Length: 282
Image 1: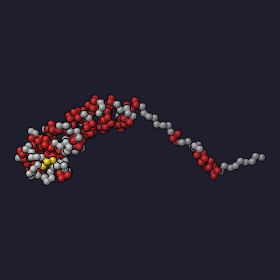
Image 2: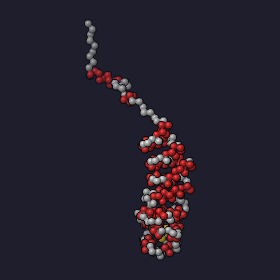
Image 3: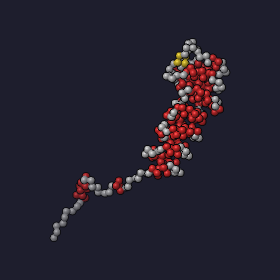
Image 4: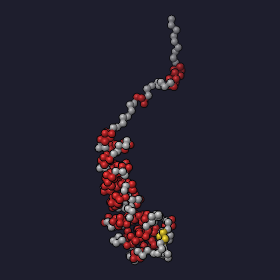
């Protein structure tokens, strides 16, 4: 009769399974091997997806094309006309490098200064410093007219002021949309005046002459500009500002002090530690 073989008990089977796993022989199929890899979408399918009815799908395609380095000028220009403000704004962000090297793309970007959405206009405002300064003055004006003192626009706009800012400011302040005073508009002008008086490119003298003498400016705009020149941007401490010492009192301010707003202007000029000073200044 045959001698029965050894009985395989669980206690004997466990070491065998451990040994097989150490040798790279799994005791069950790997889940990773069981699932096929996710296929990479083709460029053509992503281009088609840019026209998907769902905004999220279009946005996904835009990001994937950008990640693949395939978001070329025709696709960018196509996305700039998308019905979604968020997608148009994201197209501006992703397309900035191309806009700085392709004049046609830059012009199409600048045309969005007239966009109906503040989200798009503010995104374009962020890009203006990277574009040729000679092309950005008109778009900047259009954005500031549309935003009408929006605090979110102020720091972005100050970074894009033209080399000669005074004709630009005059056009802005004489426009019908800026004749009525608001707190935000006054804050923008105060911040702009502060920026123009900040070293090393301080233009304090030219700013004082502009604020005091440019014809037709609404009185409140003159006061806001002088406040920024003497006291700094909103929230600033005049004592902490670099001082500007003039050799004599600005003659341009003399007639302005005689206006009906002279009390407020005198208060600005006589503030202790004001940034701008001259001999025997009150």
